[in-house]
Image (cartoon, rainbow, N blue to C red; front, side, top):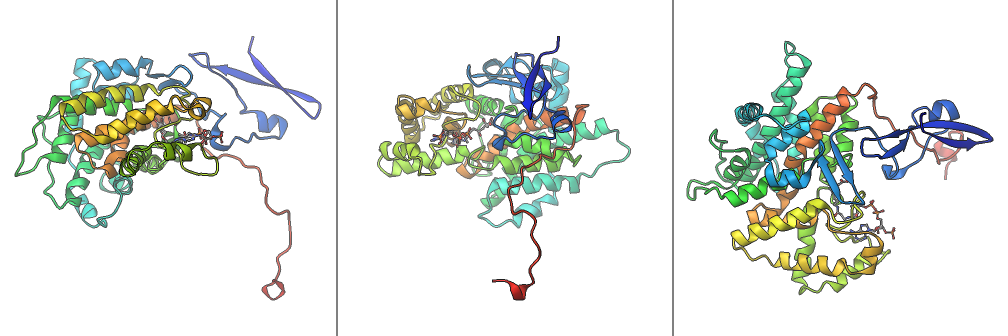
Length: 429
Ligand code: SDX
């Protein structure tokens, strides 16, 4: 017997089906609502609205659970690599050794960036934010790698996916080097995905970069933790833009723009800037906590709170452990880590944060880890974007394969002026 929800409108009862997910989540399917009742629903921020059924990632915000294709993120962080996790998200299963080797070779083969793209980087103003550069350059990839008519749609998608995963990492490092006026470093076939990124960022003719396995491990974990997260703002942007059947580069470029926002992926940069302000003001937390509690003050405690998690973000917990390990290894004392630890301790005992279910999210410690790796603060969100790329791609692929998929075009409730006549300018005012 199908489970339904009944709504009574002007004396008429309407029944709408209830759908149940594989983890027991339930939703009222309102796809017939407008046709049967003439009404639409209103839900600013989609707080109560699911835009799709998805098999990619599962989050339980009450229990602090995060699984990619059913595998707990804790197990992937402990045993997997970013490339393997990307394969899992995009293909739905962990790769065999042969599949993993083939995927790694493909990523290596497509890791170079067209030399003519170098001119783009060289002509951005020096103060340009790396996220704005990255979204522009990803969009420009279509121009340099146009669709080949002789390829099947599947071949076209696979080559585009591989190019994105591999070239975005190279472009991020290129951008950093060019902006510093340093010689760019090319990817090497003998290095793994994260090793290549670190080498392209930090190798120099006068100081060859020495691969530190602890830092490589930490970067793998950092990117695994960021790899996907259901229908967050930037993923929803990729799905919405992708629903117009635009090319994948353009849809991903839209996702990068959405992630840039300080309430979303830009929070990792905002956290470190906030911790820096606390440090510069003498380390007193009280004024910042008071501002966070003050309804009249738009200030938010960056790195705290989450639309879905109403308990500790499981990724934040892992990130904190990796932070301790890497900071210990690079023996780089970071006063911001001590402030972050104090802030977490005080906030978690503060009634306002307890009542509002505000806990550290993934961004709270991630910036401190990136600082320990030597990543410049204005590239923190670029690091998030590289990590989130497999998630955006897997969600986009799922949407294009979905038989129920439609062009996304939300409705609205109009609250403007009722009909009125045009007034000639000589009669106005
Ligand atoms: C990410 O969605 C995802 O999955 C995102 C992400 C991913 O992997 O893709 O997990 C990555 O974006 C993590 C979030 C990073 N952003 C920040 O750390 C910025 C600081 N956080 C807040 O801006 C806020 O918590 C949001 C935006 C993250 C979530 O806010 P919501 O769900 O829109 O809730 P809200 O803004 O309506 O806040 C509810 C209440 C309000 O108080 P009341 O008016 O109800 O009394 O909680 C308060 C808010 O004032 N509140 C905070 C707060 N976050 C919420 N008060 C102080 N400091 C905060 N950080």
